[in-house]
Image (tube, rainbow, N blue to C red; front, side, top):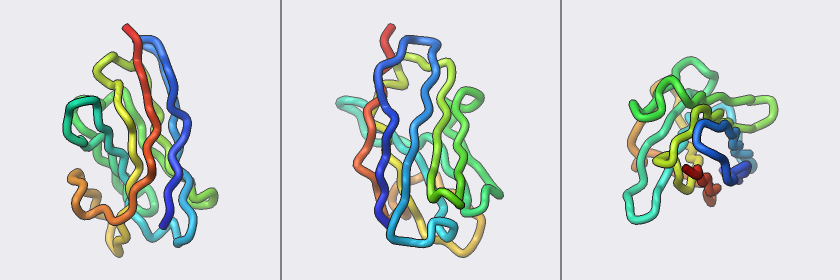
Length: 125
Protein backbone atom coordinates (compact mmCIF):
# COMPACT_ATOMS: atom_id res chain seq x y z
CA UNK A 1 0.00 0.00 0.00
CA UNK A 2 1.19 3.52 -0.80
CA UNK A 3 1.01 6.12 1.94
CA UNK A 4 0.94 9.91 1.65
CA UNK A 5 1.29 11.94 4.84
CA UNK A 6 0.31 15.59 5.06
CA UNK A 7 -0.73 18.33 7.43
CA UNK A 8 2.55 19.16 9.12
CA UNK A 9 3.58 22.71 9.82
CA UNK A 10 4.78 25.25 12.35
CA UNK A 11 2.86 25.61 15.60
CA UNK A 12 3.54 27.31 18.90
CA UNK A 13 4.04 25.49 22.18
CA UNK A 14 0.68 24.47 23.57
CA UNK A 15 -0.93 24.50 20.15
CA UNK A 16 -2.66 21.76 18.20
CA UNK A 17 -2.25 20.15 14.83
CA UNK A 18 -3.82 17.23 12.97
CA UNK A 19 -1.80 15.27 10.46
CA UNK A 20 -3.22 12.78 7.99
CA UNK A 21 -2.07 9.83 5.97
CA UNK A 22 -3.97 8.68 2.90
CA UNK A 23 -3.51 5.11 1.69
CA UNK A 24 -3.89 3.83 -1.84
CA UNK A 25 -3.26 0.63 -3.74
CA UNK A 26 -4.43 -1.73 -1.04
CA UNK A 27 -7.35 -2.63 1.19
CA UNK A 28 -6.80 -0.12 3.97
CA UNK A 29 -9.00 -1.96 6.46
CA UNK A 30 -6.67 -4.98 6.42
CA UNK A 31 -3.72 -2.96 7.71
CA UNK A 32 -2.77 -2.02 11.23
CA UNK A 33 -1.36 1.50 11.11
CA UNK A 34 1.21 3.40 13.07
CA UNK A 35 2.78 6.81 13.44
CA UNK A 36 6.50 7.16 14.07
CA UNK A 37 8.64 10.26 14.28
CA UNK A 38 12.26 11.19 13.84
CA UNK A 39 13.84 14.30 15.25
CA UNK A 40 17.13 15.69 13.91
CA UNK A 41 20.04 13.60 15.11
CA UNK A 42 17.80 11.03 16.76
CA UNK A 43 16.52 7.59 15.89
CA UNK A 44 13.00 6.98 14.65
CA UNK A 45 10.64 6.43 17.55
CA UNK A 46 7.16 5.07 17.99
CA UNK A 47 4.30 7.51 18.55
CA UNK A 48 1.00 5.64 18.24
CA UNK A 49 -0.64 2.67 16.55
CA UNK A 50 -4.15 1.51 15.77
CA UNK A 51 -5.58 -1.83 14.70
CA UNK A 52 -7.47 -2.44 11.47
CA UNK A 53 -10.97 -1.61 12.71
CA UNK A 54 -10.18 0.67 15.64
CA UNK A 55 -10.30 -2.20 18.14
CA UNK A 56 -7.04 -1.29 19.81
CA UNK A 57 -4.74 1.71 20.13
CA UNK A 58 -1.31 2.11 21.65
CA UNK A 59 0.63 5.24 22.56
CA UNK A 60 4.14 6.15 23.54
CA UNK A 61 4.29 7.41 27.12
CA UNK A 62 5.60 10.75 25.89
CA UNK A 63 2.39 11.51 23.95
CA UNK A 64 -0.23 9.69 26.00
CA UNK A 65 -3.05 12.04 26.93
CA UNK A 66 -2.01 14.62 24.33
CA UNK A 67 -2.17 12.74 21.00
CA UNK A 68 -5.04 10.72 19.55
CA UNK A 69 -4.70 8.27 16.69
CA UNK A 70 -7.75 7.46 14.61
CA UNK A 71 -8.69 6.14 11.21
CA UNK A 72 -11.53 6.35 8.75
CA UNK A 73 -11.58 3.17 6.71
CA UNK A 74 -14.24 4.56 4.38
CA UNK A 75 -11.78 7.31 3.42
CA UNK A 76 -8.61 5.17 3.57
CA UNK A 77 -7.17 7.75 5.92
CA UNK A 78 -5.21 7.68 9.15
CA UNK A 79 -5.09 10.67 11.49
CA UNK A 80 -3.01 11.90 14.39
CA UNK A 81 -4.56 14.66 16.46
CA UNK A 82 -1.84 16.41 18.46
CA UNK A 83 -2.70 18.72 21.35
CA UNK A 84 -0.63 20.63 23.88
CA UNK A 85 2.37 20.38 21.60
CA UNK A 86 5.85 20.79 23.04
CA UNK A 87 9.16 21.71 21.38
CA UNK A 88 10.32 18.12 21.90
CA UNK A 89 7.52 16.98 19.59
CA UNK A 90 9.36 18.61 16.69
CA UNK A 91 10.13 15.87 14.17
CA UNK A 92 9.29 14.39 10.83
CA UNK A 93 6.22 12.22 11.35
CA UNK A 94 5.87 9.04 9.32
CA UNK A 95 2.84 6.83 8.86
CA UNK A 96 3.36 3.11 8.43
CA UNK A 97 1.22 0.11 7.51
CA UNK A 98 1.37 -3.50 8.56
CA UNK A 99 -0.97 -6.09 7.07
CA UNK A 100 -2.46 -8.24 9.81
CA UNK A 101 -5.34 -10.62 10.36
CA UNK A 102 -5.66 -9.86 14.08
CA UNK A 103 -6.13 -6.75 16.22
CA UNK A 104 -2.63 -6.61 17.65
CA UNK A 105 -0.84 -3.25 17.52
CA UNK A 106 2.93 -3.05 17.38
CA UNK A 107 5.21 -0.32 18.73
CA UNK A 108 8.41 -1.21 16.88
CA UNK A 109 9.09 -0.24 13.24
CA UNK A 110 10.40 -3.52 11.87
CA UNK A 111 7.05 -5.30 11.26
CA UNK A 112 5.67 -2.35 9.28
CA UNK A 113 6.10 -3.03 5.58
CA UNK A 114 4.98 0.23 3.99
CA UNK A 115 5.96 3.79 4.94
CA UNK A 116 4.88 7.25 3.91
CA UNK A 117 7.32 10.01 3.02
CA UNK A 118 6.88 11.95 6.25
CA UNK A 119 5.50 15.33 7.19
CA UNK A 120 7.45 17.87 9.25
CA UNK A 121 5.99 19.18 12.49
CA UNK A 122 7.83 22.07 14.10
CA UNK A 123 6.86 23.34 17.54
CA UNK A 124 8.30 26.72 18.45
CA UNK A 125 9.06 27.64 22.03
